[in-house]
Length: 307
Image (cartoon, rainbow, N blue to C red; front, side):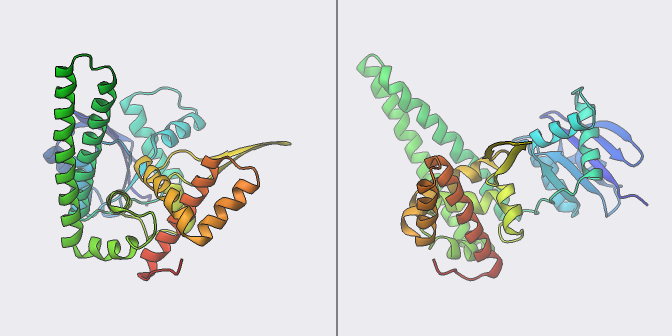
């Protein structure tokens, strides 16, 4: 009997569902009770497929993890390109749910790792921290054309508030990592690696639970650091990265700046690429990818790697 596939197209107020192989489709509220009722009669071997839509998938994730149902969070761009490849040009919520179910049936998707309650909490704290950092950045930009001194004083006071709130969140994140055994064990390994500061460490632990569970190629692809070839006939285009988890990629790129100066193997990699005429950003992306491979191996073996 074919495996049951459930495609879910998420919106803030509702979720469109499409089930295979019977092609049953319906819409439910994006609310905990409605989701639990929709998942109640699914067989144990069900695979649920939905897009990694930040801010809309919290209730669905919690329900799937509570039920122990396998799920795959796919890149929205990958889903759209799959739709076009299969001749589906229309884009509605119902169509997208069907496309996602078909992806699960036809492609070998990477299953998403279930998150522990501590990782869920860490993700919430990181998301709020990012929001505050962006608001503080906007206020700092506004200082340049504040006008009167009273307005400048108001802006500076608001920036000071953001500084205190961000500092409070940093302390809460550090305390959460220190009190959770699994997070603490991984943090102990990673924080000794040059470039892995408190913020980068928190992002890796909160946004990449698959670290140490996948091979080097799949973890690089998941983070959006795997280069993709662009060739046709005799034409050879530059390889490019795309997709993946943006916050993880950004954190590793920042870490690569320090790691490429303090880790001999990564410093040599960056120098080789620069000597070969590669752009500075391209060289740093390669360093970030190799740094991720190192971190992945450390978590997988549970032992530090000599750098």
